[in-house]
Image (cartoon, rainbow, N blue to C red; front, top):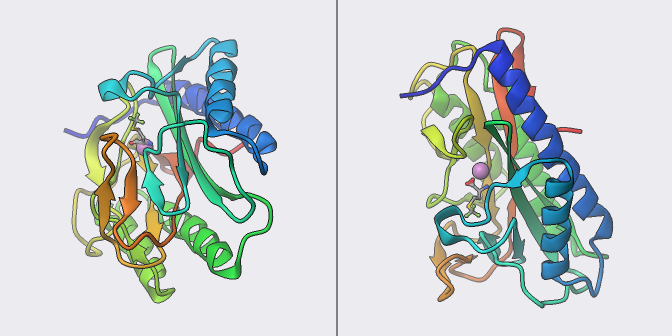
Length: 248
Ligand code: MF3
Ligand code: CO
């Protein structure tokens, strides 16, 4: 069942989303060569707690951190470690909060120092794919119109969308129905209605879409070890169109 939210509930989700967006903003500022991903996680956690919120990922199905840090060929769910960021890396930062009964979820991929043109294009295409998806999130459209917009744009640009992980409904739970694949057919899936809140999160691979999970049980990497990028926003569907709640 897809849970529809009232305007008041959307306001409360927006409060959680503002905190998580600010947390991401503060982490972005310290990204640079030599910084470890553990340092990023510590900042995420202390920032979130300082706002009176709770890190949503820590302890989720046993996940050990407040932030997912996925570098280069890592697709999602990279676990923070003592690894230092290097010039030319790209890093996906994904974090979530729980605040006064509601969740917010956001992710972005950033360059470390100077990156090559292929990685620049991968980041730009993934970000634009997210916005194409968001633009399709309007009342009366179908769920997989969002998926189709994302897939189409990504494949037009010669990249591939990951199949094994999906976007999701969000609200009183981090993951609610519906699941939102980043591939699908226009005109299919549930009809989008006012009050739906979705975390839209394309994961885009430079090479093939296939991923494998490392022995830590979490880190998803591309099978061909080519780079991957990930962007995510929490979005409310309103009668005035899609409202991005995790934008500062
Ligand atoms: N943004 C991701 C998701 O929604 C990451 C959550 S997995 C966790 O689905 F384990 F890290 F929490
Ligand atoms: Co998510």
